[in-house]
Length: 516
Ligand code: AMP
Picture 1: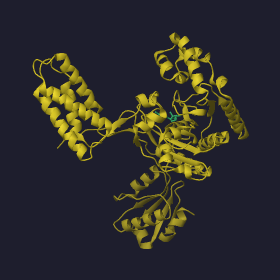
Picture 2: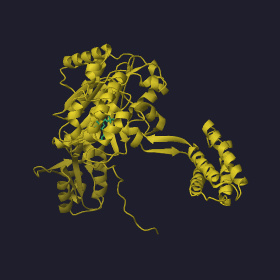
Picture 3: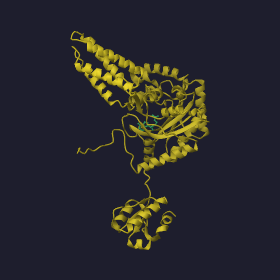
Picture 4: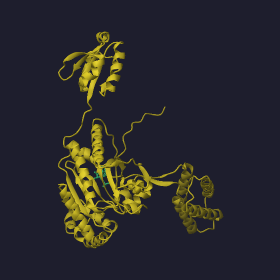
């Protein structure tokens, strides 16, 4: 027998246990009910997607894509993969004289298997794979013909090339666990031709997202989002305001208080690039006063410097040019209208010029909602407009706006505000004794459950003292007591746990008695 081993949840993931899970259900139900009143329908999305979907939409120069995705090559070519890794390992410490026979034999076998898999359609016949196999063929010929007089440099260089070729072979499609879901919604919108539907397409989703982040309070590697998207032909700021109104109504219905809405506009394809260049130039001037992360971002993604929380950089950032002063006419008008639309809905907000959001696809409106009691990870919701993303992913010209709310953080904020556990109500605990009482207990449990009551039925026989004690500890509203007398009378003794009063209730009347 194998030795017992204890397992724990891996880093950054966690279990959501009762009674907290009941609060999650309340939040999710509130989201479904609220979003339905705004005409949104739920979309179920896969957790795995082609990695390129995220690279294209979120952008390569973002932390999420460059560092945080859980990515793997999905294939069932285990043997070929094993042979490839073996060969790479053998090619690395290449000797300076001669070619070990095992490399020639190994490469030969590898090529035979690879070609077989291509014939059987298991290995994709992509141009890249064709090139890789042709190169490896050449390398094999070279190695087979090499002798002790072949120059060491030449051998090493061919070994290096062969290694690179082996690594470049595409065994399958590279997939990632989704780090967010907007890209998936847009993919689905295009894939199912949803642009032909009448009016705006309004979708919401909920579920787990995955990012390899450093875990801390409110930050996990598997976390949950509830999000919504509007895709259509109009970019009227009223849509932005409605989406913001909807998420605020939702979190207020959940019972959150003390939250703040921040908004900003980050311009469009016209004005943003010019601002980014200006920002880059200004940042370059003050480079010495910035930390290593911000220094790197001057090149890769200067807008992200504005996100910096590093204390010593704050004074420098405050003096940088602000995007609000560099918006084009159309973007300035859109942002002004958005504020008018929020005012019309009596929604309080603050403009935060540093709110740029991390992902490449955003343009114009960005917004964020923060909640008290969450420490440094205080953003519960982030969203924005992403006109052009649908086209970038191969769809027709479409405008889009949406948000993603961090469910874990909303729950934490609710708990901090004292809106924590909602204990599952237990209507009745059945305390029975004697072989004849058990069938009656089973019958009553079934009937009461059918009437919508929650019922706890113990299957081991217990003394009444013990089972009534358990009923009290489980917070049951009633204990239904069944012994020989009750069986004979066809009626139960019902004890109201709050005041210990007892009544005799006929079996058929129990449902009405418990739920008048
Ligand atoms: P983003 O997709 O980065 O705009 O995130 C939207 C919201 O998801 C944030 O405001 C957070 O509430 C939540 N969120 C993002 N990353 C995490 C994480 N690693 N753990 C928990 N919540 C997260």
